[in-house]
Length: 452
Image (cartoon, rainbow, N blue to C red; front, top):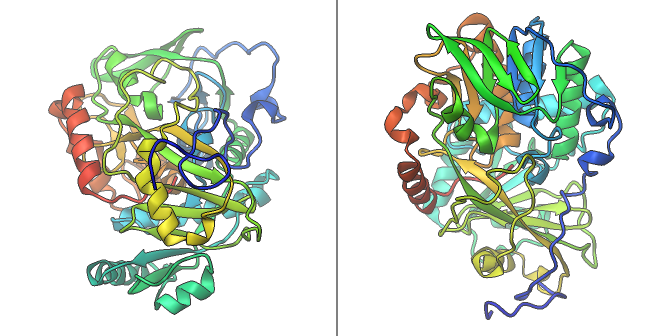
């Protein structure tokens, strides 16, 4: 394929007009209910026990789980609209195929939570139990998948190591000629991220959580090493606890606090492709395909395909989107996406004549070791962080919100989250220069699963 000159009719090189579509979910502004009302904003309370900054799927999960544990006077603040940050750009895949056992446990819990949310709230979440296929192109990868299968079985997760011909039966579009095997995870799922976000907010509000949109946190006030209040653009709120779930803005929020808090993460551009329905539309329950060696993933989307991946030359974000209250689709870059597109066509050659709908480019935050940031910050009592999801925010949000809520309630969570504890990093990692270079390095060398 020749880069740069792309045709708008097929998956050959192409340049399309910019417009955003969030994987089939309704735009947030069209939703009904109290969270998306055009009424004048209500006055902020003078006092709260805990303030959560960030109304994405991570922040609403923390609010939901704290309220379920009996917390009252919970206030959630969102600078834009709920779910209008990275959440609305998520690919909608929830997979337990993660490098660490604690990450697999969080994703497994998230799967169970998202499945029951619709019954609990009456809000449709788009939950479909699709399962997923992790492919191996060589014996080393196949061995690593067998090890993953052993670890998942210890956790009680159903999985099977299968042969290439079994892959073809489960997903006819997959080219199996270079495969040596695969791991089938029947419990994995896909959801509509904005709807999951909305359902979590509805459930949290039903338990007394107060949610305020269009409210920006300017500074967290600290006295004698304790969180005492939060200053917003609409006034101050006294509080005992603060939770930084600001996602892409978590680093800046930490630096703007009265006592600076190190939240070591850096933003990078993340791409995925949306196609129009195929001549033989894909089934909604078709398994998600995860080609680790090809550094791509693909799922069914409205009769077509949604496919993204992990480029070897990641693009850091320096300015665009940093000062926006809501994240917007950024500039398309087909030349940059070409390696992933080529990998997709090698894995699914039947897509060669498929029509493209859009290339989505959205920001995603990454940490120096590709593990999320969780826990109470050193030196400031009551300041908690849950951010830096490394493009697995949807998979982690349910479980991570549960464990952080337990941590805040009991002083420790019900699982060993030490590999994710924010205390593993020091002030050195708060340097923007260090973060940029380290994140670029680890993204080039590793193959994390971008399954948001």
